[in-house]
Image (cartoon, rainbow, N blue to C red; front, side, top):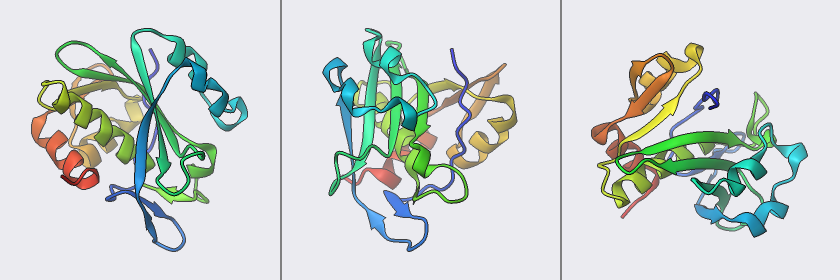
Length: 169
């Protein structure tokens, strides 16, 4: 199992252009095996084909509503029947580093995992494994709780906050 090593740059109400501050509406859509062609290996650090082919996983892409063919980020989750486990999360290479195009991509994907948890009746509970050096960061920005080792979880109140930022009713 991979540990999260993604820096949550900013919690926004969507995704935000890092230069202009312009906000773009997003869409999150599930990918299935026939969608593998949408993911170019050179644009990602992880092998997303493995995640898409894993029967226990659901993989989602984040894109802007106006440009659904450009993937901003990817998320792999697993339904543990009482919570959602985030297996992998990744921003596209053009959304990494100091010259990234958009802010808010990882936060948007984490909020979506929380939303799925609420929809499945798990009260927003989401778990994930974090790189040790990012545990404090995830506590601060996501309101996540450190369980033990590298395992962290997001409980109901923190999940409600994240979902309310990204998904207006």
